[in-house]
Each structure stands twice: as structure tokens, then as C-alpha cells.
Length: 401
Image (cartoon, rainbow, N blue to C red):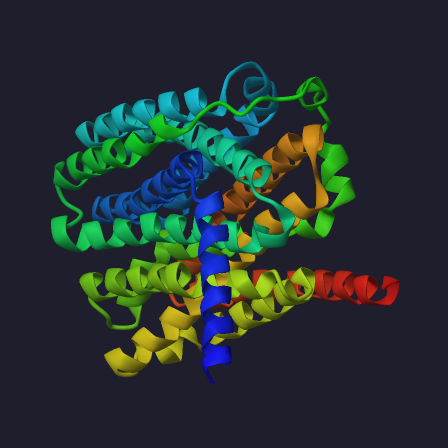
């Protein structure tokens, strides 16, 4: 018995030592960047949708306004690898965070949809730059044998940032400038750890650019995972409060369920990240994609059950959903190194941008034509269309072994 306890203590100590090894100041700053990006999206998507809906703007036009934020990714993506080669990741992230705070202040002061189009474009460009640099740096720092766990912690911090968005709206409401002022303060607070990030030396070979289309063709299943994930999740983030209210739920209760989804992603992604280091990652991707499609189909019925049942359901749903993104980042780091890694990370974010445009736009049109409850069916459809790809990729990997 004592021998088992001693072995268990030794294993725990070794795991703790590994954790401390990669949880350094730079990594904390990178994770703060992820939290910052998701804080912006977790607040801006539902807040701006609610403000515009109260102004009588159609859901299709709300979706187009949301898509503008994602369109900026296509403008910044060709520049990102060159910027990362010329400037340090830390400097890019620091300046992007400060600019985001200023833009969010403007968007709160001038609450007009036509003024919001250019502002959301700039916000989208800056958040994309934060996302690209943080993902490239997290994979550069991590070693493959614990990459799943590192990315899981990174994603958990991102989920915490997203969870804070709806939680903030419950406290401030969606009217007036108060939610925007609180958002600016939170952005500045979340940006402080970015000054911990130290420059990572790049080899000359890593400064050479690799075409984005080259890395997309090398790993299309991984890239498309982020497109499908973004299409479903960003449609959910944008319209979930309206979807919940169509089921008879209050705005505050719908926002609290969004927080629980993000909280599930924050908590459950840690054990799932450990699992990703011990099983075939593409097979786990297929399981998570199937779980999300089933979850979206069940969502309209589960939300109208008791608060306990609905809360438990969305908590586990959020964990499975968040793992799709974490697996995509992990597979990028497993598949690409050096110069290819920066391009692959950029392409991965471009796919996310494409999904962010596609998802809310199709969901908005579908909800205008067939009612707000269509959100769940459209989101489930994205995952079901993608499901055969990771299954086929997993099967090929098994045969090759």
C-alpha cells in the first residue's frame, strides 16, 4: 500500500514539475492574449446583436455587421507572417490590445450600425492578429508530448474570457454605454500580462514565408475543423440570447446558459487535453464533432427542462465543443514546424474567419425565414457535413500504422 502511495506521489510530483516547466511568464502572457481575444468576442457578438435588435435591425443585417468583423481576417492574414518575422510576437500583441480598448470605447460612444461596420472591421483585424501570434507562439514553446495539455490550458483561459462576456452583460445589461466602459477596463486589465511575454529568437529559416494555400492543401481536414467550429460557435454566440428567448427563456437566463457553455469548455477541456496526449487525436476529433452535432439537435428540448438539467447539459456540451478548437491547434503543432508553423497558424485563423462569416450569416438568414429556433438545426448541420472528413482521416491513419 505504501509503495502505491509513494509511486502515486512520485507521479504527481513529476506531473507538477512538467507543468511548472511550461507554465512560465511568456506562456502566461500568451494565454492572456487568448483570454483577451475571447473576451472581446464573448462580449461584442451578443452585446452588439442585442443592441441592434432593440433598434429594430433585421437579423440578416446583424449577421452582415458581425461578418464584417471576420472579413478583416482576410485583410490581415497575408501580412501576419511578415509582421511576425519582422517584429516580436510580444510587441504585436501589446499594441493590438491597446488599440482594441480604444476602438471598443468608440463603438460604445457611437451606437449606430453604419458607424460600426468600419470599427468592427478594425476590431476583427486586431483580434485576428492577437489570435495568430498567440497560436504560433504557443506551438513554438510547447513540446509534442505535452502539447495537448498546454493547448488545453490555453483554450481553457480562452473559454474563461468568453464566459466573462455574457456574465458581464447579466450585470450591466445591454443598454447604454456602461457595458462598453466595463469592457474597455477588462481589456486593459487582461492585456497587462502581455508585457511578460519575452521575444522568442527565430532562426533564419523560420523567417522565410510559406504560402497559405500550401499549408491548407497539406492538412485540409485540420483547417476545415476550424472553419466548421467557427461557423457553428459564432452563430451560437451571436444569436443564442435571441434563440433562448424564442423558447420562452429570459435574456438574463439565456446569457447565463452561454456562460455555463463557456465554463464547461474551461473545466472539461483540461482532462480532454490530457486524453489528447494519450489517444489518436484525429479519432478524438471525430468523436467531439459527432457529440456537438447531437448536442445541437437536442438543444431546443434540453433548454426548456429544469434549470439543473439544462445547466448540466450545456456544461458538458461546452466542454466537447471547445475541444474541437483545442484539437485543431494541437494537430497544427504536431503537423507543422519552423517557417510552415507561422503560415499554418495564419491559415488556420483564416479558416476561422471564413466560418465566422458563413455561420452567423446563414443562421441569420435561416432565422429570418423560418424562425429563431432554426439556429440549432443550422449549427448541427455544419458539424454533420464535416463529420466524414475526420472519420476518413482517422481511418487512413489507422491503416498506415
